[in-house]
Amino acid sequence: MNGVNESKPLKSASAVRYKPGDYAPRIVAAGKGPVAEEILNIAKKNNIPIHVDPDTARLLSFIEIGKEIPQELYEVVAKVLVFVSAIDKQYMQK
Image (cartoon, one colour):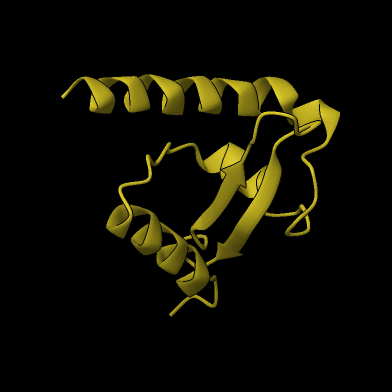
């Protein structure tokens, strides 16, 4: 053993909710490691679309649950919401 921590970085996951009338999307869940895995499991069980973007997940994980995302992340989160909207439309057509 060389004393260097070669383990993989912890997985991050965040759940974002945007309701019409809200000023900005809000973080409704966030975590790393086992908590991130549980967020993903809950999303899968409830057929909630999952967008894989480790950098965005890491940034969102620093935001307190229940808080709106900061303006600096609007563009990134908008892309995620467009992705989710497209999946919702495909699902509704089935």
